[in-house]
Image 1 (spheres, rainbow, N blue to C red):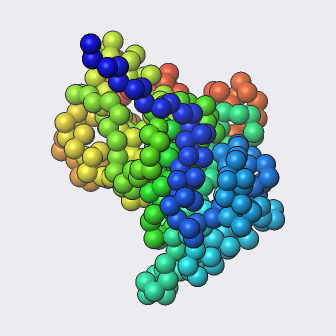
Image 2: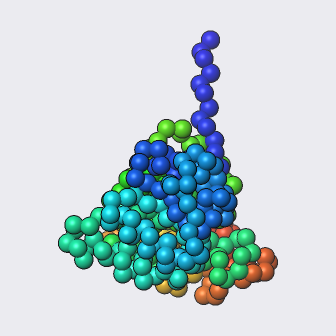
Length: 332
């Protein structure tokens, strides 16, 4: 009788973040974590919990309530030989430190002719769904993807969360890791050993034959739900999770569109001016002759995120919106 194979370890997204940070601190003696409430409280969402006891106050420490100081600390520490992991509690707070992000973190290596390295990993939390209102619920990835000098990753699954954090911390360039609030409880297989997911490599999470859906972050899960509904309409959707937005894996998307001849881009961010417009432009530039229908997009309406749970649920894109957009595009 054959021996039963051990089941892969399952972790929630929040624990996979902890696992990734722990792996970085273990393998990189010059790495440390700095941010608001990351030490004593373990972070506002708890994904640094236990690391203070494990690594001590010289490597896990709380900062003043100043996002500008946190990013400035990361920049200064990196150019003097450390490999900081800095925590920006909410992505919305980038407005407090955009000068440090846009004019120091993103540009210093270029301004010093490559002699300065900035191995800074920034973890930040984006997304709506928790009734945290307009100043704590935004998805602002388009802001930072527009800045040359930064790499931007967006983990969808627990496996991606650990692997992309480790990859970000091993990179000698600044990498912003955009996490998602509503994904924290999602569980999935996460190996115990340290591993890195290559930055700039998309993941085809569902293969299909006649429709391409490119979904960002948590919208991948909504796209997978939508694909099951679309299957009954004769639409076999291929779903691509870019995982990295900057640099973007254009080749994987274009290859899919050349196969399926149709495309839909989905993100939680506001549709107008969102990253989906960049993906749409790349598809029409490189695969226009293969398209049998216009490229469709699904995103949030041009409005601040509502506090009201009912309005917020209507605001955030979901599987039903994806299905409706596909049906409208194809006149089904």
